[in-house]
Figure 1 (tube, rainbow, N blue to C red):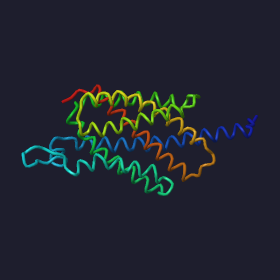
Figure 2: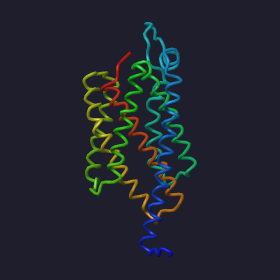
Figure 3: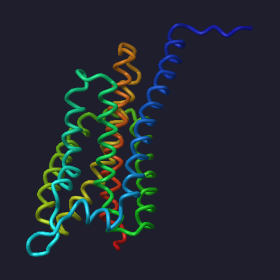
Figure 4: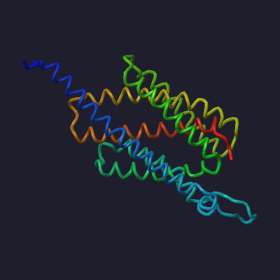
Length: 243
């Protein structure tokens, strides 16, 4: 006997299928970017490469950062802002290229961690980050609570630690860096749950076109990728064993 499915049940099945496809794309973009960043950081994370490309001797024989170092460090901020603000104007292909460029730039930027921390602590922190990130992603997806206000507060905190991080880049205060990392762990894990909830709402939006969903999946993958990297760096600064 054939099972009769009413319209609401059929729509529910369609919505779940669409959500699975959407999140499949989100995680494909995220993991692809993490792979690019990780490979580049590992490949070029050597003393010889970093000292020859990111630093140069001044008149007193002291090493000072080169223009390339500042480009690698700050250009990703511009790329991220461009993606966020121009998502409706840029084509999917352009957004994809910007995402790829961001992951490459960040790979070079993160190459320095391989001369600051031991390989074992980097690997251990990565898996710890993956575990914490996974738990918060699941919580954000399944929770029935509205995280909108929670997310707004976290974004205010994120802006605060972002500004503090830039200031500390020039101050080089170890204590300030420690405080920023402590706050960052809570902010980035919380934002992970918040964004998973928002992505779930968008995945179930039947009114969005295929192009809009592809763009949002890419932007969602980008956002989760950035949160993962920042959570990883916060935990590494707190618990990583230095060379």
